[in-house]
Structure formats: structure tokens, C-alpha cells
Amino acid sequence: MYILGDIGNSETKIFLLDNKYRIKKNISFSSKNTNYKFLKSKFQNLTKDFNKIKKILFCSVVPTSFRSIKKFLYSKTKKKCYEVKDLNLRSLIDIKVNYKQVGSDRITNAISLQNNKDNFIILDFGTATTFDVLIKKTYKGGIIAPGVKISLNILSDKATLIPKVDLKRTKKVIGIDTISAVRSGFFWGYSGLIDNIVNLIKKETGKSFKLVITGGFSNLLKGSIKNKLIQDKDITVKGLIKISKLIK
Image 1 (tube, one colour):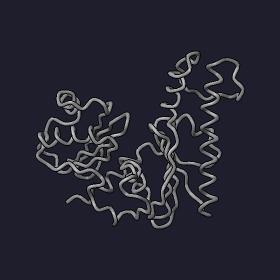
Image 2: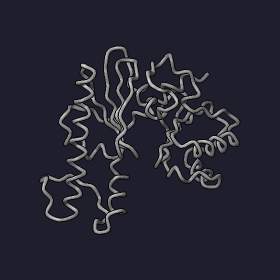
Image 3: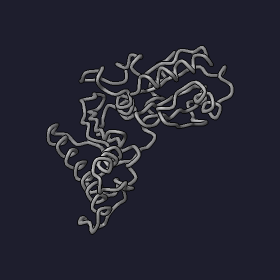
């Protein structure tokens, strides 16, 4: 059995796989909650037999949370808990940027898709909205824009007269009250931001791309993006599966 995990700024997702890399169970929780007692209660829902665990791999952008989970899992399994960047990934991908400054989740997503014939733009609606540019097996770099949810929360926190708003699709651009105006600004604003950045990437590289979107707001925004796209919510775990095969 294998444990694979994705520790994001907001949420941690952990998967239990069998020896044929099929997902058997998964759990998720806030990345802020990583004390031993909490982890013990959560992992009981994943497995009660830690002796069967053969591999452990995480992609993480929260070092403190990873250290806590790593310590907990070692106490239960006595197995080394790898982070994606601990491994030599050169056989899987050619990274053309500062390796230390690229999030493990973004590298993992790129490895999930890379092949010898296609180019991809990977759009992830996470705490930040990120674009990653993959030309065949080469990771060329990317773009980081403000995340939808965090931007929405900051607006209501800083502007006294703007309430908390749940983001929804709007048919009309012009709002008739504060809530509809905010919804329109975010919905159509992010749709325009996405298409503009995708088109600029195409222009700058002179190449065509497949656009793959993932993350929490991909369901909401996929219908408003003009560029043809593919939605894949499992892109990160697919990448972790590929990378985990490097662990002997």
C-alpha cells in the first residue's frame, strides 16, 4: 500500500493506494490542523494497518505542515516520507526555471501531463491562480495571479460596505446591487484574465497548447473561458503516482 499526499496552502489531500496504484481511500483537512492528536484521528479514516505501507510521497507548499505529517507517519510506519523535490525528476521532466522557487504542486501537475508530443497550459484555481507552461517534456515557467477566493475575502474584509459574497455565474455584466456587481467583477474579470494570459502565452511562444484546468473554481469558470479546455481535478494525484514510481 502507498500513501500519496498534496499539502496546499488551504487544504491537505491524502490518498491510500494499493500496490497497483489504484486509489482505495482518501481524506482531506485544513493544512493548518497538523498536530499529532488531530492527525491520528484523521488517519484512522485512511488506514488502521500502517505496517502495510511501502511508499510515502507528498508534494507540499507548506513546510511546517509537511514536517508534522512526516513525523507522524514515520512514528507509525518507520518509512521515509519523501517530498517531490527530494527525488531526481530529470528522467520525467526538464525544468528551465529556478527549481527552488517552483511549487512542488506545480511540478507534480506538469509531470502528470508531460509527453513527447503535446504542449500544455495548466491552470490551477488554488489559493493563488497559477498558469504553468509545459512544452512537451520541458517546464518553461508560469504565471501567478491572485486567487479567486482570497481576493474575494480581502475585498469584503477591507471594504466596509461590501458583504461576504458567494461567487456565482452572472448572465449580465452590469450589476444592479453590490452583490451582483461584485459577482460580475470577479466572474467576468477572472474569465477575461484567463483568456488574456492564455493568448499572451501563445503569442510569446508561437505555439499551440492544450489548456487543462483544475482546482476549486474550475467548475464555475470553465463555461466562460473562450479558449477550448479540458477539466481534470485529479491531475495532482496522477502526477504523484508517476513520481512515486521513482521510489524503490
